[in-house]
Image (cartoon, rainbow, N blue to C red; front, side, top):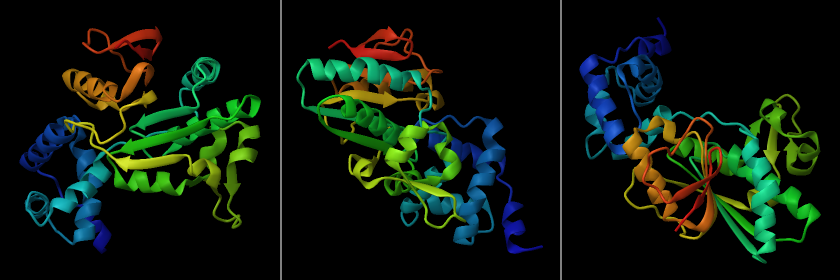
Length: 281
């Protein structure tokens, strides 16, 4: 039996899972029902292997010790779900091109700030830059900046690098691929990279949406928070939306994922279209 197989056979016991799941939920809002025990066990076995620990109790004791504080970041990197694509849920980007950007121009505004909250590995943030660049090409220039945030340091590093597998670009229109992507010179690698001019328009920072305050500007024109809140309980979703709205301009746009809703929530948002809202105050 090789070393990798040994670590893969380490079992996460029920009491150990309960302690971890309660901590993850209390501090990060991510629901971890018993049905996710096997998933959590599988993902954390990689951390045990990295730390050369041969049981979960040793790992848990380390995580909750003063010496293991930094390990919590690594633990959350493997716990958090990061499913995203370029131009995912395209109706939101169509609305941005057809409604939001024309409104910005009509107001004579010369600066645009957009927040991609729960940005994962950066595909959403870079999609936003492509949409803006396409609009600028047909209109006058505007200064803009995209801010991306996520809990996973691994995903944030991928976002900063802007390097993706070639297959990821399948959802990007052909005309945009030529303008905004670079292909790896090593054809064996089959990688693409976002061009430097677009990468310069985006910055990323680590954020736990469960924090009571967010270290972010207060004047965003648009906030995307899509397919992130589905992992939270309803009252947590409401609290997070209200905190995000504190950083949104009056009449700014707030965009949720298609599987998310603010029905019966006490939040300062008015529905414009399905999953698209405006801040009312």
